[in-house]
Length: 156
Image 1 (cartoon, helix red, strand yellow):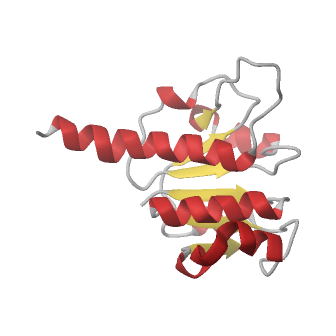
Image 2: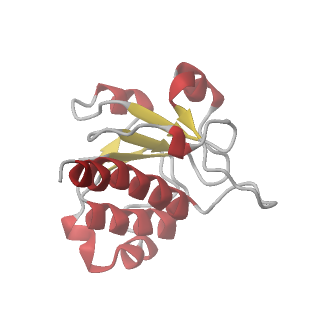
């Protein structure tokens, strides 16, 4: 199972969409406080629709709490401020993908702790970043492709 960590997410519908994606892909979702909304927020729940009760969710008081979680394995940090494209990484089952808040991304001190595990989604167009829920979907589905679909075909 993959893990997605949203570090201090700010926009309820993005987190709701990511919650729905997490249910669809059997991915555990971790939220790191402070959140920019309440988990009871109607916009958050509306984006997650009727799948919210199936969501595998953990809420953490800090990033350090995430690192202490027994289910967290290898980290991949996603940022528009780094150079290595996500598709050059070799993902493994159980990998954890960490995304920063919508308006500022992951803090430099977190990125600096894991320089070899920082990835970006290339954007040749003239924009700063993708919508957070789109970015999570891109990376999670690439990880699924690599781990579950390529490996099973190679064994045939």
